[in-house]
Image (cartoon, rainbow, N blue to C red):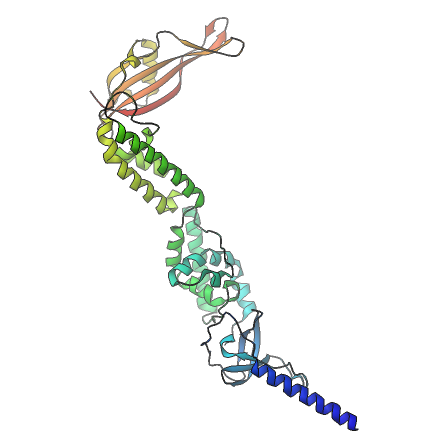
Length: 394
């Protein structure tokens, strides 16, 4: 009997000791604000987070000294009496108002990737630590690629807002990353318009690489214009298209509208416009100085000239200053066995189109080609290549 009494006394001592240690060393959420206390009450169903950073549905049994004693919501009186670990003490900043985790995850789970895309913008807007929001020291770059995706994102954010607003109006801040912190989801939904605008301004990495390349080309065109004084060559140095877009509003608009994804990326458009606006006053007076080489019009060839005019959309509106051929005879291209492949001539027109939205003339450059038919004969002439460049006028 003495042995039985001693064993019972030992069990009681062990239980008291463990409970005392738990109160002295409460569980806690290391990410939580030390000053937070949800002012919860005994018998409340709550959400608790311990050092393992898992959300647990619990019940409050006691509260004292900035701590809550919690157990599972279905813990029995027998377990409380006989299991020393049935109830545990938590710091107040680790215990939060209840929300139905299963219901929340079931209703909002499909929007997880949507919320993830706005965390960088959320961090910037509220000056929040990105790692605290994401649970990671690195985060992928999210961006909106086009208007269709913009509309899709807008609709998804609105759907998420309606679900949270109508079904989960009160959600606690667990101080964890977004996968375990419903308050972050609520914040994203509530600020959906500002965050969508923020994400719209994030540059697509592919577009950024393209823009960087274009800006280098424009810089090259700028240098060529700065160095040009007069003559028939040396102005463009690969930069004709950019000079044309600098001085022609329509040319610029046509170029920008054909760039995939730029309609949803105002940053790309503004960078190109700024660079072209800077190029325009530099190249505009230099284009007027660029003349046409006389040897481009050295020979006349009525059939070739008629073919060149017929290639143009509306030749009747053009004022033709000069037209001609630069080659006296056909130039023959042969294969490695010396057999002709085709022959060609180079033709040029120097024209002015009064409907253009710039004051310059143009040089129109043609390659007139005839494919080899065999036995020393060639087929019908056709335009195989065409290009144009701005030039000064007479």
